[in-house]
Image: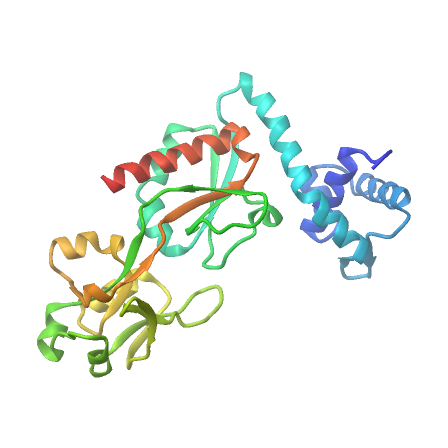
Length: 302
């Protein structure tokens, strides 16, 4: 866009993300009048207003929404390119942010993140727990972890773990009182410790792999939790049958506090993948985190 500067687009993007001119000024550490002048100059070049302004809030116009969507990836790529040149003479430093579901944090990241912080003391790690699928570019997050490699355009995925299964399990006490289910139909005589997603508030359907097909099983519910630690604790206390991905139960299966149930019917899941914008690895603060996660995932899989 002839006459439009990189800084004007960065300021426009920041206003959009922060929701106000003052918020953008605080984020960019410049004076609010400078933000207003930059926005006015950008709107003059385009010939259209980019925001609807009221006394309480600022919202994108149709033109503003289109400009935001068309420039987000480009600005992100330019930022990473500039940072990669600066990194040539620097140790890894700055903030790096990661988003992931809570159970992935508990199983995968919690045992290792302190080592990353100690290895790279000049990097400020920001961890965001979110069960929902996050658009990390629009949210300004550097990378995420989730199941599978199906991604939005402009994203890259790096596999961290092998495929896994969702396990069903119960304590000896529960089994002694209720017996062992031998087929999916037997689950109607048992009670489930159900899981509710924090972000969507939806109950997680119980799915099993039966006769080469995925089937949804409805069964009586003993209690509902939104935390995998509570899920394991409730199962150990004999309150019902639990269900989470099998790698999280390595310790419990090893010490036999919990017993696997219906293993031939466990639902398969793709492995965990780190995902990030295509050009983000050029920034050393992000690249060292991606490499660190891959290193630790390989050790866990041995």
